[in-house]
Length: 88
Length: 88
Image (cartoon, rainbow over all chains, first blue to last red; front, side, top):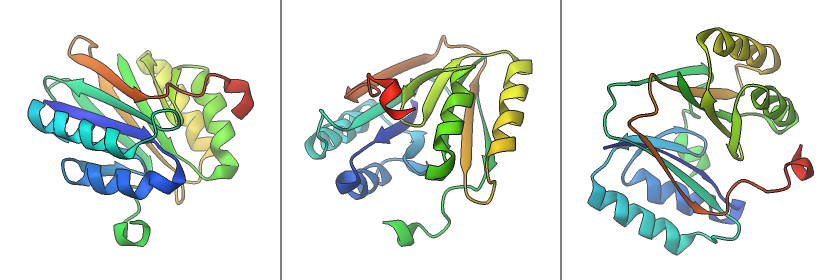
C-alpha cells in the first residue's frame, strides 16, 4: 500500500521521529514522509513511533491508499531542505 | 476532488497560511489540511498561498485524489489542538 505520514512532535523528539520514519519511507517535507510499505512494516513503524512519542503531546496522521493510481502531488516553493544532514 | 495540503512555512507566515487554508479546507494537524475542493477553488487557494508565501523559504505539498474511495486515515496521539483560537 501507499501511505503519507505526517507528524507533529515536540522539538525534543523530532529527530527520533525523522530517523525512525526514514527507515521505511521517503522524506518529502519537514514532517512529511511518503512511500510504498507493507502492512507488516507499517505495524512495525507505528509500534516504533509509539515507543518514542508522547501520545499526550505528539500527533501522527497516516493516510493509507491501496493504490497510487488516483494520486497526484503538486509542490509550491522549496522542496525539502536539500542538506538533510544539516537538520538530522 | 479530495486533497491533503501540507505546508512548511516560516513562523512569521504560519498564521496567514492557516487562515487562508481554513477558508477552503479542514484543519487536521498542525500544518495539515484536507477536504473536498473544486478545481476552481484549488486554483484560487494556491494563488492566495503564492501571494503570502516566500517560495525560497516556504513549501506547500498538495496531494490530489479523484476519489476518497481508496483512502483511510489513522491517527496516533493527540488530535489537532482542540483550542484552535489559542494558536490562531
